[in-house]
Structures are given as C-alpha cells and as structure tokens.
Length: 139
Image 1 (cartoon, rainbow, N blue to C red):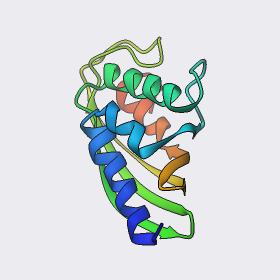
Image 2: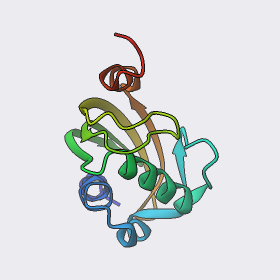
Image 3: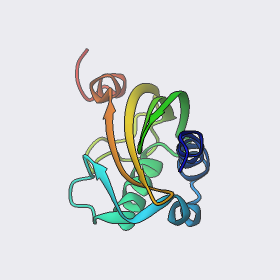
C-alpha cells in the first residue's frame, strides 16, 4: 500500500468510522485482530473491542467529533495529530456523571497498516485536560 493510500485510509477511519459512527465500514478499515493501545479495560480484543470502545465514547459524548490536523506516513506507519471535541451528556468510564460541558482535547495516534487495513493504533490523549474540563480533577 502506498504512503498516500495509507494516509487516505487513516482519514477515512476518522471521518467515516469515528465521526459518522459507521461500524459496518469499520470492518472494511480495521483488521479482525485489530489492537488498540491502550485498550478499554475489560473490553474484548479485536474489532469487537473497538466497537465497545466507540460505543462507550459515543454514549458519553454523542456529538463527538475528531478533526485530523496533520497526517504523516512512512512505511507501514501513519501518525495523526487530532483535536477531539464533544459535549459530555452520558456517563464516562462508568463513574463520571454527565456534566453538559463541551470539552476539547488533543491527541496523537500512531497507526500500523498491513494488507490494506489498520491493525494497530497507539493513542496518546490529553486526558488530564479532559478530566479538568469535566471537573473530575481540579485544575
């Protein structure tokens, strides 16, 4: 897969799977044995675990939107710098009650692609900033 095709696959993942919530498309974009680093505690592995993760986040932030700021690729890896935003309207991580707060946080993902599908994603998010915005942690 070319570097440009890999970058397009990653953009499609964020726009169509994450932003639009098209879980049928997730099966076209993600490998069946996909691995999320770090995964959601207690979630299944693979594609099923990813779907659980998205369902949890979409429940907590029903208007969640990921904006891809930068995409850089080399070999089988793609790095994406993202800005995530959403309104906290549902329970987050089983304990953080809805606040109604619109929050914005940033992140960087490193994604590995094999055989035309995303097989692994390492995510680093500003969760401290998110928790402070929600009032779960003092500033």
